[in-house]
Image (cartoon, rainbow, N blue to C red; front, side):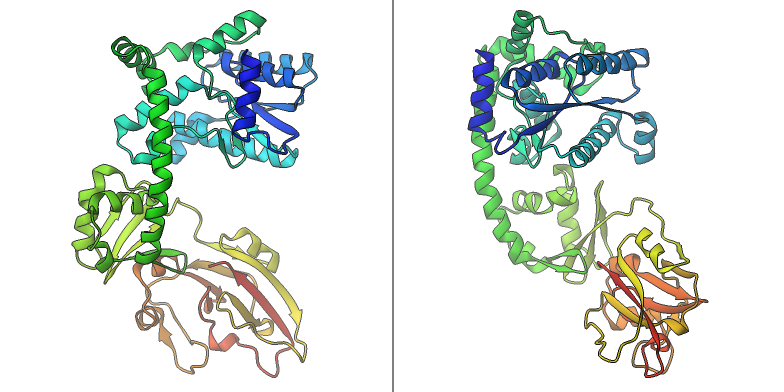
Length: 442
């Protein structure tokens, strides 16, 4: 029965498609081992990926050994990676659970691409979906957060979402499938476990059909969310513009929205806004130029008649030394750099993202850095010096524009405001013999 439902769910939700090779995320727990057993019975070509997060000492290592041995016994390609999850969480200032999630999804995708797997199968079940619904409800969320997990998202598939935890346990018993028990699943210090062991039993006592009711509600909300997404998309096109990879919202149009809070939440949700920040967002819209609001992922800035959304810096390097043109590949935002002899038919590209410089006037190593107060240069076409601060004002640089600005420097002289204007001293002339061509993506 379970095998038939498994195949039907995969077919109805298009989880297999043209897939011939599927990478299974296998922890060794009951869900992932049942999923593996089902895929083996369907004859699908599979591989197994196991993450050792090093969070439970010897138990984590025993889980790895168990999955490794199972893969070997069944002639299944096996991939394993150990992570310093605690260190990563500390470095990123996120929870252990979020760190484990980020690490595993990033690694799964690397394995999928390197080994030509079509999909990555996750063993989430119906009960996981219900728990996620309640977690999102308790934290405050838009409709999207109440639609539950999707059977398919990009390369991720969840072929067990139809099955309850009880049905999975019964199938395991019937087929005597080996698995490892994670004792942390019974600890109520985690939010999901509190809901699983303390809250859900009460709801089921009130309504024995609670699981089915929540699942049906989530499905209806998913359809409503599709309608809402189309509506919000239309509004977003009207009230925003893109400028140098920054999203700018028109304040005058934001103030005409109704119902205001609901639409603002949906518009700014991609930039990390949560329901508790909506009043602060409205104050920002009504505030003075320079007022800011920070979310976990973005900064929202009032700049004249706009709200500018920019991604918060994550501590990446802002100073790079370039010894040869190939070193530009190490610098975020740079696409390519090459030295070429100047041919008579050469035409300088009109894009500000491409700099064509007289290589004879440039001395390596070059420096890529943030701009600093007091910096000055000779803008292309001008013979007099200009302070960068004045140049920014004249060219209406916003605060994020200035903060994101990177300078290319040679022997203490500014060569290029990257993505904007080169220095007149380094332009191509009739006496130029060799040129340095550099391209950035923003």
